[in-house]
Amino acid sequence: MVALSDLASALESYRGRDRLIRTLGYCCQLVGGVLVEQCPARSEVGTRLLALSSQLSHCRVILRLFDDAAMFVYTKQYGLGAEEEDVFVRCVSILSNLADQLYYPCEHVAWAADAKILHVDSARWWTLSTTLWGLSLLLGVARSLWMVLKLRHRLRNPPEAFTSRLTRGKRRTVETQICSEVLTLLSNLADLANAVHWLPPGVLWAGRFPQWLVGLLGTLSSLLSVYQAVQAGGQANATP
Image (cartoon, rainbow, N blue to C red; front, side, top):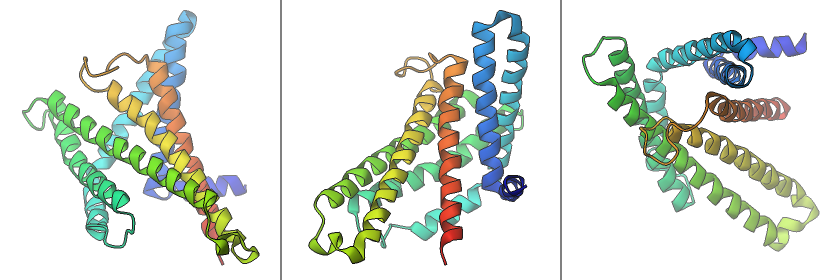
């Protein structure tokens, strides 16, 4: 009952519902892709799962029509990152916020073109939105790598006070931050691989992934995101 209650609570929030839809969509694509390619006798089931995955993905596109305002508020609050001490992290975060802010309207135009609401070439807008998404992910990878190296250096070369009994809790905090950054790095790398796959043919490995591999990478990224959200929720509840 506790697990069911936690699930219901998560689904009441937009982010929680989006994580579930994303995870289910990629899981369906993974299983459906395997069945279509490896199990001819069950190809019909695989095709239905792939269709369900497509509809869940389309559902997320519709829901993202309303994300612009929230993204704008976040970008405005971060601004030029005056409160960020690390210059590299500040620059990367500003560029990432800009890419994310531009991503949404480009995707909206692509969706509207597919829906015959706007008479423009949807393929170009999908390519532009995917490129912006990939750029944001690449910046996220760079940020996570930098943070992991910086935090590991802090652990290996701590000040004298850092190793005292009174500050062992700080050491555990840094280790937790490293773990979180590594998970974020893996999640972004999985999504970045898919983002490149969805670019026009001729760009690196664009268009070369089978359905099951796209589903596998997306499932991995989604599960890591869910795990981090659960961990963050648990830490928040444990804070007095």
